[in-house]
Image: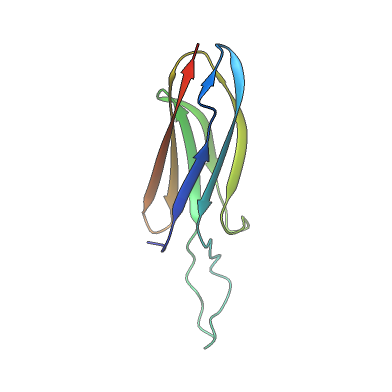
Length: 109
């Protein structure tokens, strides 16, 4: 498990039905590609977030496959249409099997 992995999300607290809202996510993660070497010349093992998903009220909104070319602390921003009050569930999957989740609620009037 990577150390100090911190997922962060930003979703508006409220919206009108049918609004498109901007969703922003960032996860603190070293994203080691496996191609670099340490000071002694030994390969540094690959450790990346290899998948990111976002669901709203159980319905998939975003499903991204991530490769080693993505930089440290991956950031995603996307728009989602909300028609009802509910919760976004964000999930990041690490190479080592770790899974990081975060949720954010939105109220639709």
